[in-house]
Image 1 (cartoon, rainbow, N blue to C red):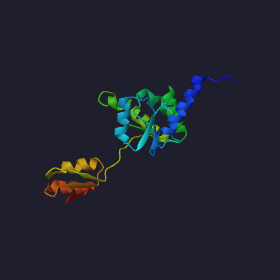
Image 2 (cartoon, rainbow, N blue to C red):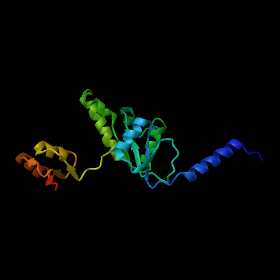
Image 3 (cartoon, rainbow, N blue to C red):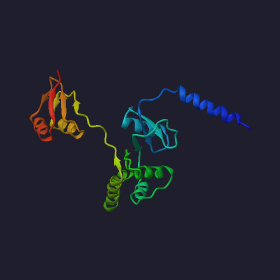
Image 4 (tube, rainbow, N blue to C red):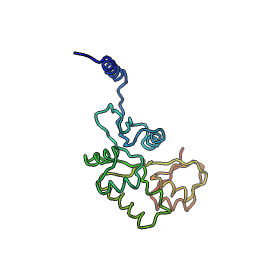
Length: 199
Protein backbone atom coordinates (compact mmCIF):
# COMPACT_ATOMS: atom_id res chain seq x y z
CA UNK A 1 0.00 0.00 0.00
CA UNK A 2 1.53 3.29 -1.13
CA UNK A 3 0.77 6.54 0.73
CA UNK A 4 1.26 9.92 -0.89
CA UNK A 5 3.32 11.86 1.66
CA UNK A 6 2.18 15.27 0.38
CA UNK A 7 -1.48 14.26 0.66
CA UNK A 8 -0.91 12.90 4.20
CA UNK A 9 0.86 16.08 5.31
CA UNK A 10 -1.92 18.23 3.80
CA UNK A 11 -4.69 16.32 5.59
CA UNK A 12 -2.82 16.44 8.94
CA UNK A 13 -2.19 20.18 8.55
CA UNK A 14 -5.85 20.79 7.69
CA UNK A 15 -7.02 18.85 10.77
CA UNK A 16 -4.52 20.64 13.08
CA UNK A 17 -5.64 24.07 11.77
CA UNK A 18 -9.29 23.10 12.24
CA UNK A 19 -8.64 22.16 15.87
CA UNK A 20 -6.54 25.28 16.57
CA UNK A 21 -9.13 27.64 15.13
CA UNK A 22 -11.50 28.73 17.91
CA UNK A 23 -15.11 27.71 17.33
CA UNK A 24 -17.08 30.76 16.23
CA UNK A 25 -20.32 31.48 18.07
CA UNK A 26 -21.60 33.64 15.21
CA UNK A 27 -24.36 32.55 12.86
CA UNK A 28 -23.24 31.80 9.32
CA UNK A 29 -24.26 33.68 6.18
CA UNK A 30 -23.57 32.56 2.62
CA UNK A 31 -22.76 35.35 0.18
CA UNK A 32 -23.62 34.24 -3.34
CA UNK A 33 -20.68 35.99 -4.99
CA UNK A 34 -16.95 35.51 -5.26
CA UNK A 35 -14.93 37.06 -2.43
CA UNK A 36 -13.81 40.57 -3.25
CA UNK A 37 -12.73 43.31 -0.82
CA UNK A 38 -15.37 45.80 -1.99
CA UNK A 39 -18.16 43.22 -1.96
CA UNK A 40 -17.10 41.95 1.47
CA UNK A 41 -17.12 45.50 2.84
CA UNK A 42 -20.54 46.23 1.30
CA UNK A 43 -22.00 43.07 2.85
CA UNK A 44 -20.46 43.71 6.28
CA UNK A 45 -21.64 47.34 6.27
CA UNK A 46 -25.19 46.19 5.48
CA UNK A 47 -25.47 43.14 7.74
CA UNK A 48 -22.99 43.97 10.51
CA UNK A 49 -20.51 41.81 12.40
CA UNK A 50 -22.98 39.33 13.88
CA UNK A 51 -22.37 36.81 11.07
CA UNK A 52 -19.51 34.63 9.94
CA UNK A 53 -19.49 35.31 6.18
CA UNK A 54 -18.65 32.65 3.62
CA UNK A 55 -18.47 33.45 -0.06
CA UNK A 56 -19.49 31.16 -2.89
CA UNK A 57 -17.04 28.28 -3.32
CA UNK A 58 -15.37 28.68 0.09
CA UNK A 59 -15.29 25.80 2.55
CA UNK A 60 -17.74 26.55 5.35
CA UNK A 61 -17.11 25.44 8.92
CA UNK A 62 -20.74 25.66 9.97
CA UNK A 63 -23.56 23.16 9.79
CA UNK A 64 -26.11 25.44 8.18
CA UNK A 65 -26.50 29.01 6.97
CA UNK A 66 -28.98 31.33 8.62
CA UNK A 67 -28.85 33.92 5.83
CA UNK A 68 -28.30 33.91 2.08
CA UNK A 69 -27.10 37.16 0.49
CA UNK A 70 -26.71 38.38 -3.09
CA UNK A 71 -24.73 41.65 -3.27
CA UNK A 72 -26.16 42.64 -6.66
CA UNK A 73 -28.48 41.19 -9.28
CA UNK A 74 -28.06 42.46 -12.85
CA UNK A 75 -30.88 42.75 -15.39
CA UNK A 76 -29.89 39.57 -17.26
CA UNK A 77 -29.81 37.53 -14.04
CA UNK A 78 -33.21 38.94 -13.03
CA UNK A 79 -34.72 38.04 -16.41
CA UNK A 80 -33.40 34.49 -16.23
CA UNK A 81 -34.48 33.90 -12.64
CA UNK A 82 -37.96 35.34 -13.30
CA UNK A 83 -38.58 32.46 -15.73
CA UNK A 84 -36.85 29.84 -13.57
CA UNK A 85 -33.52 29.77 -15.43
CA UNK A 86 -30.01 30.19 -14.09
CA UNK A 87 -26.74 30.73 -15.96
CA UNK A 88 -23.45 30.07 -14.22
CA UNK A 89 -22.58 28.35 -10.96
CA UNK A 90 -23.51 31.22 -8.63
CA UNK A 91 -26.95 31.79 -10.16
CA UNK A 92 -27.55 28.03 -10.20
CA UNK A 93 -26.80 27.96 -6.46
CA UNK A 94 -29.12 30.94 -5.90
CA UNK A 95 -31.92 29.14 -7.75
CA UNK A 96 -31.20 25.97 -5.76
CA UNK A 97 -31.53 27.88 -2.47
CA UNK A 98 -34.85 29.32 -3.62
CA UNK A 99 -36.05 25.84 -4.59
CA UNK A 100 -35.05 24.62 -1.12
CA UNK A 101 -37.38 27.27 0.31
CA UNK A 102 -34.73 29.65 1.64
CA UNK A 103 -35.14 33.40 1.54
CA UNK A 104 -32.34 35.12 -0.38
CA UNK A 105 -31.68 38.81 0.29
CA UNK A 106 -30.46 41.17 -2.44
CA UNK A 107 -28.56 44.36 -1.60
CA UNK A 108 -29.17 46.01 -4.98
CA UNK A 109 -30.99 45.41 -8.24
CA UNK A 110 -29.11 46.49 -11.38
CA UNK A 111 -32.15 47.78 -13.25
CA UNK A 112 -32.44 50.70 -10.82
CA UNK A 113 -29.24 52.18 -12.29
CA UNK A 114 -31.30 52.95 -15.41
CA UNK A 115 -34.24 54.69 -13.69
CA UNK A 116 -33.49 58.00 -15.45
CA UNK A 117 -32.83 56.61 -18.92
CA UNK A 118 -34.84 53.41 -19.47
CA UNK A 119 -38.14 53.66 -21.38
CA UNK A 120 -41.10 53.38 -19.00
CA UNK A 121 -42.39 49.99 -20.23
CA UNK A 122 -38.90 48.43 -20.07
CA UNK A 123 -38.30 49.74 -16.56
CA UNK A 124 -41.77 48.49 -15.55
CA UNK A 125 -40.85 45.03 -16.90
CA UNK A 126 -37.94 44.81 -14.44
CA UNK A 127 -40.14 46.06 -11.62
CA UNK A 128 -42.46 43.14 -12.47
CA UNK A 129 -39.45 40.78 -12.48
CA UNK A 130 -38.59 41.99 -8.97
CA UNK A 131 -42.19 41.34 -7.89
CA UNK A 132 -42.07 37.83 -9.42
CA UNK A 133 -38.76 37.10 -7.68
CA UNK A 134 -40.23 38.24 -4.34
CA UNK A 135 -42.83 35.51 -4.84
CA UNK A 136 -39.98 33.01 -5.25
CA UNK A 137 -38.36 34.08 -1.95
CA UNK A 138 -35.87 36.63 -3.24
CA UNK A 139 -36.29 39.87 -1.32
CA UNK A 140 -34.66 43.27 -1.09
CA UNK A 141 -32.48 43.70 2.00
CA UNK A 142 -34.11 45.92 4.61
CA UNK A 143 -31.76 47.43 7.20
CA UNK A 144 -32.81 47.28 10.83
CA UNK A 145 -35.19 50.07 11.68
CA UNK A 146 -33.99 52.25 14.55
CA UNK A 147 -36.56 52.57 17.34
CA UNK A 148 -35.27 55.98 18.31
CA UNK A 149 -33.06 58.48 16.57
CA UNK A 150 -30.94 61.10 18.36
CA UNK A 151 -30.35 64.49 16.76
CA UNK A 152 -28.18 67.37 17.94
CA UNK A 153 -29.88 70.22 16.06
CA UNK A 154 -30.89 73.19 18.19
CA UNK A 155 -33.94 73.83 15.99
CA UNK A 156 -36.23 70.90 15.27
CA UNK A 157 -38.21 71.50 12.08
CA UNK A 158 -40.81 69.49 10.19
CA UNK A 159 -38.04 68.29 7.85
CA UNK A 160 -36.01 66.86 10.75
CA UNK A 161 -39.10 64.96 11.92
CA UNK A 162 -39.99 63.68 8.43
CA UNK A 163 -36.37 62.59 7.82
CA UNK A 164 -36.45 60.61 11.09
CA UNK A 165 -39.77 59.01 10.13
CA UNK A 166 -38.34 58.20 6.68
CA UNK A 167 -35.58 56.25 8.39
CA UNK A 168 -38.19 54.30 10.37
CA UNK A 169 -37.73 55.97 13.76
CA UNK A 170 -40.70 56.02 16.11
CA UNK A 171 -38.99 58.36 18.56
CA UNK A 172 -36.89 61.46 17.96
CA UNK A 173 -34.59 62.27 20.89
CA UNK A 174 -33.52 65.92 20.90
CA UNK A 175 -31.32 68.09 23.10
CA UNK A 176 -32.99 69.59 26.20
CA UNK A 177 -32.27 73.07 24.85
CA UNK A 178 -33.66 72.32 21.37
CA UNK A 179 -36.56 74.42 20.12
CA UNK A 180 -39.32 72.41 18.43
CA UNK A 181 -41.31 74.35 15.82
CA UNK A 182 -45.10 74.03 15.57
CA UNK A 183 -44.69 72.45 12.12
CA UNK A 184 -42.37 69.83 13.65
CA UNK A 185 -44.98 69.04 16.31
CA UNK A 186 -47.65 68.74 13.61
CA UNK A 187 -45.42 66.49 11.47
CA UNK A 188 -44.65 64.32 14.51
CA UNK A 189 -48.38 63.83 15.12
CA UNK A 190 -49.07 62.96 11.49
CA UNK A 191 -46.11 60.57 11.21
CA UNK A 192 -46.55 58.97 14.69
CA UNK A 193 -43.12 60.08 15.88
CA UNK A 194 -42.69 60.87 19.55
CA UNK A 195 -40.37 63.82 20.27
CA UNK A 196 -38.55 63.55 23.58
CA UNK A 197 -35.76 65.59 25.14
CA UNK A 198 -32.68 63.99 26.68
CA UNK A 199 -31.78 64.72 30.29
